[in-house]
Length: 426
Image 1 (cartoon, rainbow, N blue to C red):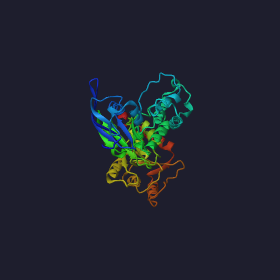
Image 2 (spheres, one colour; image 1 turned 30 degrees about the vertical axis):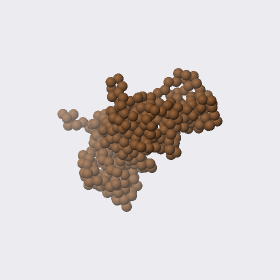
Image 3 (tube, rainbow, N blue to C red; image 1 turned 180 degrees about the horizontal axis):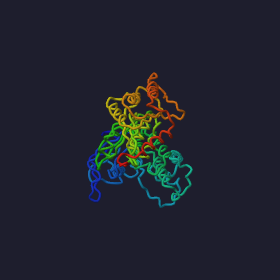
Image 4 (tube, rainbow, N blue to C red; image 1 turned 90 degrees about the vertical axis):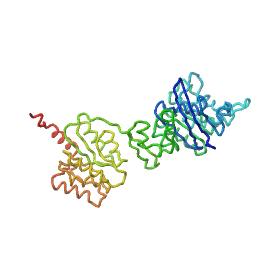
């Protein structure tokens, strides 16, 4: 841990006979943006309070720039690290610019007063926090988000090498979240160490270089976003069922929770939908809400149709982007197609990766197949040398496939579902 700007060893915190932190040991690298995550009550804010010396542990130590935090005097510590707390009282009537200027007190000597350098630092901090236009406003007139940005500006004005933040984005709208976190990340490029508590895991993944995950007061995992944010981790630490995909530009993991939703009736026709590239989401929602029993075949993991299907609890198979369909997925697909009363093909680009969706129709389906086309033309954008459209033409020639508008397809399926069953007839 030598050379780490912040290190913690064997930290124990007990409050009202409850052990909040237990044997926490970790270090934070210089010039990195480190995120602290965990469920409510896992000890995130308590850890930040120990790092900032607003809470003394029952055991263990916190070292700041190689020195035990307990031996710093108040001014020395304020020159070394700055803190944005989760909550801060604002019962006073000061204007915004005076509160931001409070961040400079540790930089001033007893007789120096407020210098031009102090003014420059405060103006820069207010601009970064997006509050320059609030300079003359009195604190009680601010919204929660505006006050949050004032606290961030005050912290930036301290110009410390270490910045601690406890849920810095909790009161901010999305544009200010991005602006503040981007500014903090930019500071790390000049050597500033930033440590922040987060609840939004996607923001944590995007902006943080390193993540510390707490569970029941202990360190559950440390590492890069790709090392920490996995489906197994989300299930174990957050009891969250989710898909983890990777941003096509940054390569950082993205979390897509699976919001299981029960179908209103789960009765009537069994419908298999073939789609891709986001073309099927609206129809999947419509058919699901009508209570049909649905399957969605094989979809790419980065496809919004896959996100829709999983969120609605519609059975489907997933394959990595631009990968051929596996034999396991083909077997599941054949069973879905064979069991369907109707199949709906939504025109979407077809390549070698998803061609098997159409091939399986030709080999295993005995259902009525609909091709969703407003102009009655059954054709797709074919990147398989014409093979996809040859399958569609053959199905149409045999009478197994009809090209119809969406409204007509839904009407036919509805009429089928309205037929009384044998039990109803008896």
